[in-house]
Picture 1: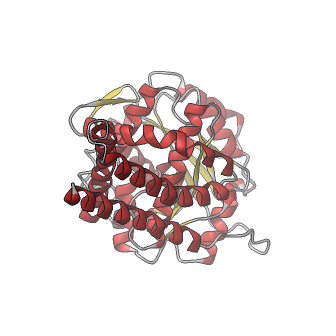
Picture 2: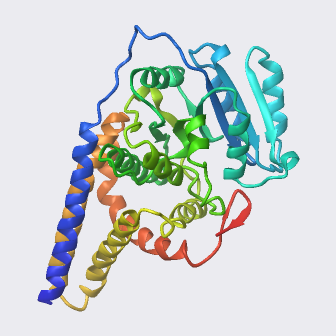
Length: 377
């Protein structure tokens, strides 16, 4: 018992310290303010990979067309990845209705390619402007999104920018996802600030076309279903460690919707976790494995506590310490997104999250999963 107590204590302290380091790093990321003296300068090619997104594509494109930014400096490329719905037709209609914008539709079927990374790579090669904004077809943004990005690019050396992504939530299931995702955004941003990047989101990722081609794009991981964001971040940071950063500007937020069902949620998370053993930086894999073992120890102490009463105090200490550390980070991130009230869900969500992490961690690496009507692994 004493040895197990020591192991649990060490894991708890290590985990809490790691999260608190991320918390401090998040606080040290400078929050950008509007710069009224800077006029739009750079042109941006906005890439929107889309597969069966007829329900979302119009709102996504309209939010881009409404940007307070010169239309001559915006090129919009939608890459239709072999959709079986009306995605392509809707894009063509929007292009016809907005002749003063450059809106291009690339179709993977005609290019004889398939998969998100192949589609993005093909579109980047066609891009007119050197700055690429990568986003998802189910995302929207406010009217000063591109202006905020350009102000940042103008004021500091930039090869890649990870900008904030927010889950618009309604019911308890969606709010729970938003709470978790805000934690992931905070960790990803803090890790970049600490010069040891781990995660980001392709829903709001900006980079230079020249830099993408210089580092070889997705070469080396093009066969993996996921990682069009994180693997690119790692390669970009390896080449340009001082020109990759998180943009802490609420005008640059991209909004998307959480999963509508438990099945969709598990499929998405399995896709995310499936790349966990593929990182070149083994430090990231070690952190993920350590976090998994820590969550397992909490679960074990809870279950075994019904038979060995001495394990209950250990379980309680672990869960309290975990919630305290995570709560500080998540609350700070929620304040940035003006969603601080969601922190009240943490005691409710935490137990379910531990079980979910344990299940998805194994499930994602032993079985195929479905995403966008494709069977992937």
